[in-house]
Length: 172
Image (cartoon, rainbow, N blue to C red; front, top):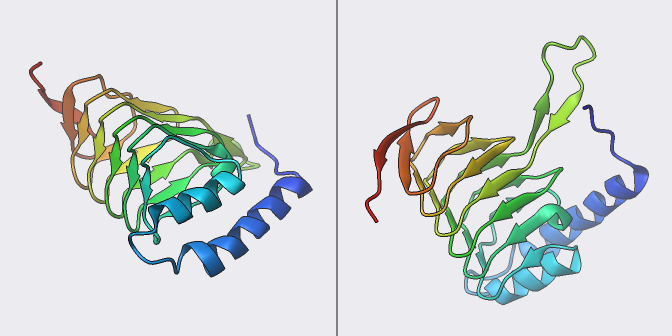
């Protein structure tokens, strides 16, 4: 399941890096529409009203999908060599890290492996939390600050810790 990057992919990332450094990163805080436009120019699928802050790091905009009113806060990092989907009204807090790839440590060739991440509607990923590849965060769930998510989180749950575990169900 190793992943190789084509020359076209590498050129696209180089172009995005230039746009990010020159036009995205230095845009004033309230210019969410401007940053959304830049991301859409590189293939991101963003619903209306998304708030993606200037110091958020998006590795591959063409693999990013956000529902309406989704938010990616300052310092958050979206490492998405494959698709990451962020649901409507979901919040990715400051310095959170969504990591959709890693390396197969059991293989001597140490190949890159990947898996999609799905963040449900109105879910909240707390500050400095880490969400790893092949995980789904259920609708309306909360991932506590500094948690490390290695497995799916069911809807309407609060999880915390390293590794993250469900500590509470949210009453509906």
